[in-house]
Length: 474
Image (cartoon, rainbow, N blue to C red; front, side, top):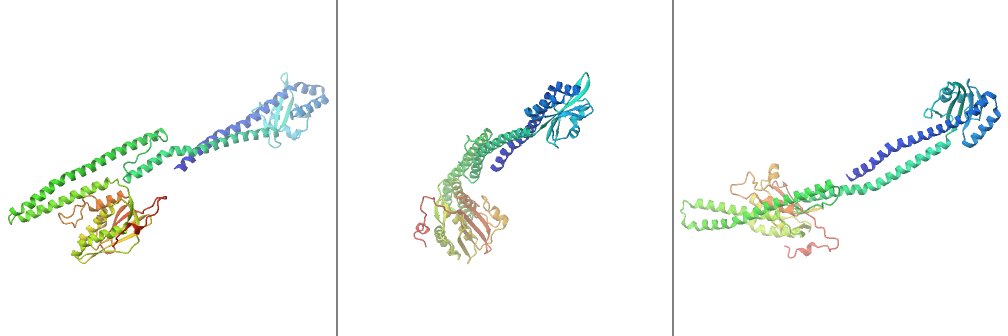
């Protein structure tokens, strides 16, 4: 956009200079020819007495002397014709007397017609200005005075004028080009601020704001509007998160009390009511899980802790060791493919929770004797942790909705799960600048993958070795 704006700022004055400078230069050329023609006409009228003396008395000697003197003084060459078009006296011209007589101003003058300075002609054959003035006495044509003028001096003046106009135009264009770049930057700077702020806001940074003292007034108003909108959205999001957190927190105590009361009722329940009591306790436990998940989701969306370098493989090994105690009694193996030791940028504790979601779902859907595989991969700009199970997997439509809040698959049993696990994992990944991806695994089950940004140490800080961050690795 900046390139287009600079091009427009340079092209517009260029077009204006062409539209104004070219007619100005052409008009200046025309004015120079008119002024020369007017000057020659006046000079032709000033020698009217000399022409009359030549016509009446035939005094050619004095006429030749004055014509030669005139030529020395002005550079113009005079030719006198009688009414029949015969050359009487004159200086040597580039055009012969007969050729000169065929010029339109001369023919008009021989007819007794006078052409003003705007209609006098230039003989491009000889590069001369031809001015013809009829000498009329008592209403009769007596003679015709023709003055020829070389255009060399005039052309030098014209070229000089063109050069002056060109230099002025080039200076104006240079100034415009010099000012176009800073002007474009001044106009586009608030737009770049808005672009970066909008991207950061969309990525979850609701604290970002743009300066309101940059650029034209219209863009300053736009920046103020963006800041106001950001504040409103931030307030609404914070209020929603606070409501979820408060409501979940307030519900925990009554649910714990309800669960205890249900357990205390067990000795007093008859055999017929034991099944209903067990169902009530299952529902209370499920409600407790949902509330705990809501609290975790609210904390993940309001996460403001700084990110640190994280040894990904060490976290994977630690969580797998814990989940093997859950999967082993069910005959489900959890293996880790050998991979590189990589550092990712993450908020402490978030990758652990994401892996817990992956492994919880994988253990739940894996058949007896199945195997869950985890792998750490280097994607260059990101570090990926991939989890494959041998369960029934998900269709493309189910994978598209799996990270929605409270969404549960069509094969989920009543009372099973809260539908918040993958939503929490996706929220935690976004808080770290990463993402959660779901696909079909080579084993036929679900391929769950979390990608976190690769750790980039500050230039002044020494690089951290993965081995130094994983004491006691199994």
